[in-house]
Image (cartoon, rainbow, N blue to C red; front, side, top):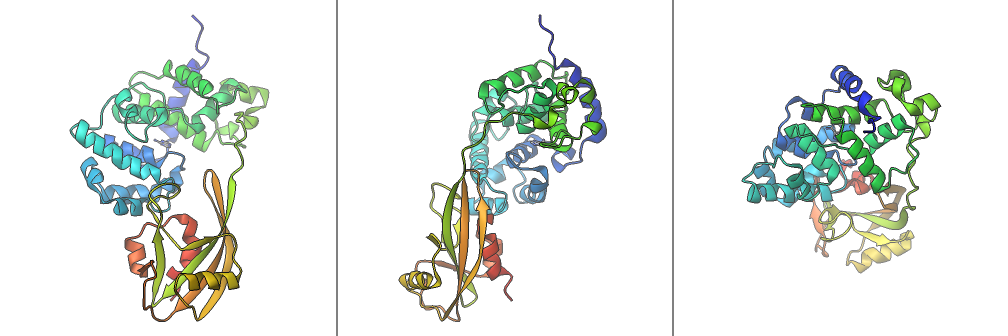
Length: 351
Ligand code: ADE
């Protein structure tokens, strides 16, 4: 039988993890529910970004039933600013399936986890290993980078067969009874030492057996096919303020930022004159309008290039199809994605 080239990494990696693991809230008091929530939040999101959300989320929704029964707007408000809002909806769908099909117990089975919404091989492996100690790999982008460098592999990690081969390689070397620690050790090494672009090989417990380090090619790995360019969309965002309230619109149920709230907008960059006409078209006649500086927001597949228009009134006689929300209502009730943040601040920070 061919010897598994990865076998020698297991012991030094675990020893390194024991001494160097960051103290993270989902590691301190693990439970299946807490692991489920943390792994959804950590999908495509850095630990530092998740930290402020995690505790607040668990306080508001402390168990699977509370999550299953939560009002959607409350759920989205708890997720506000974390992005990829489909995760929050899938997390709730998964919680509902767990309460309906598994009596409220998150299933201790990789295959059953994989059938829940929003859970792919990586998240199923992470939950199975961390929450239940089951020997399944959890190979994310960080881990693919670590493994590509250890093997000095130039194979494209965006290719699913390359990923599967890596998973199979890991599956064979998971130390008995330590699956969760082992998977998290690999992630941790990728997140804190084996960094993209500039690996800290001097601090790496695996440098002595890393082929990428030996050949001096670690920094250039992994090989990843270039992503298609993001589509750029130009918009004018309206900050309409009347009687201390801001005009909001609920975004459509399907598509980008579905079901969240947003500011009124128009396609393209409008001149102040065009903006005035647009506002008049909505049935409002501003005393004064003022352009706001341009900004942009980057989503995975799209980029919004925005310019803004501020218009204010002292009184409001009709709603014109908008929801007019106070600062307090916005803070407590309406989930607004970060894309609007800089324009929203013209209202929120205004005394
Ligand atoms: N990324 C995904 N899961 C993680 C975990 N459990 N710890 C740290 N980073 C992670």
